[in-house]
Amino acid sequence: MATEAAPARPAGPTRLVYFDDMWALRSAATVLAVQEEGGRVAVVLDATVFYPQGGGQPADTGAISAAGTRFLVEDVRAKDGVVFHYGRFEGAGEGCRHGFKEGGCVSLEVDAERRSLNSRPFVEYKGVIPPEQIQDKKNELEREAKRLISEGAKIEKESEYVEVRVIHPVILTPNVHHWSRS
Image 1 (tube, rainbow, N blue to C red):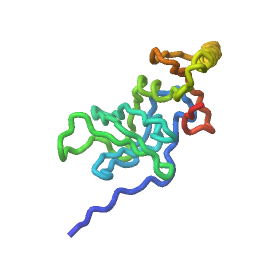
Image 2 (image 1 turned 120 degrees about the vertical axis):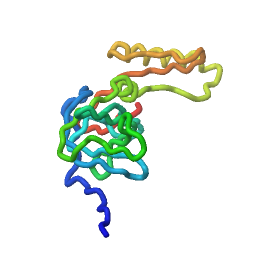
Image 3 (image 1 turned 30 degrees about the vertical axis):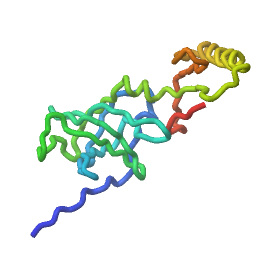
Image 4 (image 1 turned 90 degrees about the vertical axis):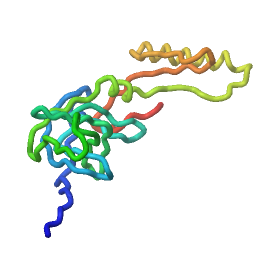
């Protein structure tokens, strides 16, 4: 009686394409494995343009496609240097086989709107301000907002309260694996 072997793990880490081009939303890769892990389907590639969840930043979403087969990426996680793209095959029902072949070439496309939203850290002040200090705090936040605007930031005022939210783009470098709050 034959037993089913566990899926093989990739020999090395996934190449992170976004370290070469932080603005890239599309790339090509080679399929290393398609496996079920914890009740979810995971696609493992030799390279990825998808940011995995980490450091407080949510994972990218998007699609991986090849020869009429489309895998909808709903979550991305990195484990021991290997990136797992979790999701589902579009139009595939229970028990349906996927169309990706190990060693086959696939196209990756990140959801640009979600990437943009997720990669913008923010500076904000939330807390109780004594009434006599409200105007000073508001002035301080407005000065900070003007400084950031002069550097190309986008400003949003969330409410009529003192809270002013300042959102600015993050600049990732090869040494930074996630965004941070200032």
